[in-house]
Length: 274
Image (cartoon, rainbow, N blue to C red; front, side, top):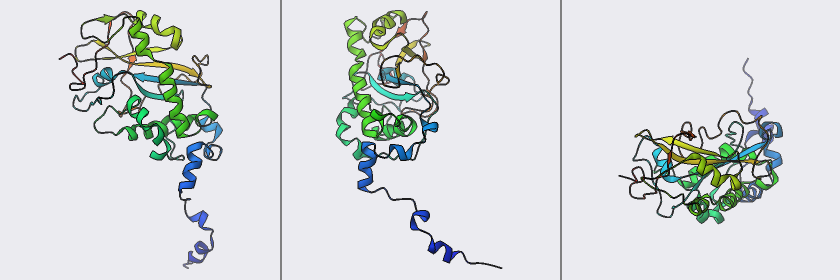
């Protein structure tokens, strides 16, 4: 016997039949973090103890790509750029907290300069939304990070705090096609500011050289330098993140092998030295 379910469906509350629409009013709630308690399961998202703040060198990033035509370094980019702020745990990939361009519109100029996409096939906003979905939504249980706006504000503040380009320049470490640097010398310059546990990462280029790619800075849950907890350190939260797809190609620069700190070339980003 067939029984129609239509009367039952009609009698149900519309809230049970449809997901709530995200209105402009709700966007303000998301923007300033009012929805954090509703959208986050503490056990699922907040088990991490440490963060990694990662800065990348555009010339090294371009060397990490297999396809030399993909890379693009905007004219406004002449320094280290943000790769991400990642809790040391698996990616969230949380669709529960949407991000809109209006959430970060007031930061647009700073983000475009300091957190650009370096891929022709991905816009900077697409890069930012990926980072929020994959990583930012994991840290939103922390009061100072509990919205897209706050997350990106903190990242820009950390970028200003860790002005590694100036630290290196003051120590005579500048980009060059010919000159190489010892990893230990780089560590000695950065350690007083980034902590002893920071990691200098390289990629191996097509000439089998170690090319400086990025720096990973461990932070505690309150976003201060250093983290003494080791239980969350399994795996690499960079895998699958950033403006590329697939795993991060970076690896710790071998201490016994000199590294190249290549210059930025906006016209030939993949081949800055010819």
